[in-house]
Image 1 (cartoon, rainbow, N blue to C red):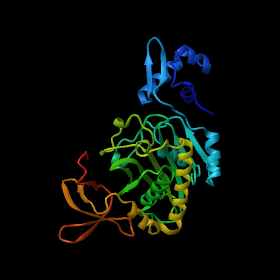
Image 2: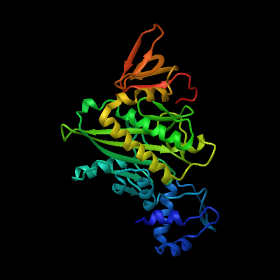
Image 3: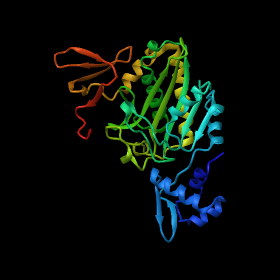
Image 4: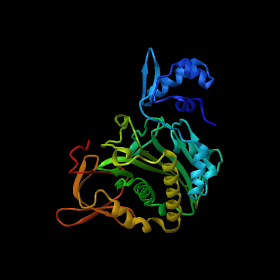
Length: 334
């Protein structure tokens, strides 16, 4: 059932202002609650215009994800866990929510959590990842692998391949991959992938895969990924499909990618990752603390480690950890 906050967004219009009293009457909730939700939505980044004498209106069309439509789309795409999907209006982090479910004894294999707004989303190296409400795609999915943790190398790269290819096929945007876990478009960050592993149930490994993608984001300036950012709408000629369709397509692709990784590990995705690598053949700088090196991107090896070719012809492989890679020729890079 939709929350009062979601119902409020569904009631707001783009073509006319509505007062708090009008919204209260339409929603059958008290004016103080309406005013509180409006204030919070504006603070969270909803593209909202207010005028003291007229009320409130949306600056652009916003459509919350409908649970019934999403299940229908997921079943149409043959997603096997459509009835296990949870849609939350707001949450601290979809990955943390799934982790709490798991700690409470819930089997999270195939279970997904989608949110309209994430107040404490996590990116790599502790960076903030949040977007304006109802303008993005943010979800996490749980998966159980019959593997030791040492066999999980390259999982985020395989997920990246699944997501990038699904977005390319769906929108036509030239989505690429920036090692180790970023989606890029036009040399700007489009989204990210964060994988948490839990080995408490040895010999199995439980993974929670978190994915955030900027779709049509009016508040890119609020992001702090440490690099230039973009959204999908800025990289396509036509209108994007509905967010419900995008969620269903991407989520189904991720589930298939996780299943494939469980059977074949990263090896089956290596060539495709290298074909999507935005660093390939370009001068890249790697840094860790005060140490910095420059080399030409050479793609990843069979274990998902990145390779750099230096000026003397030698090639060195690097692992993620605390290392950071950036393009030397990206003038706008932070």
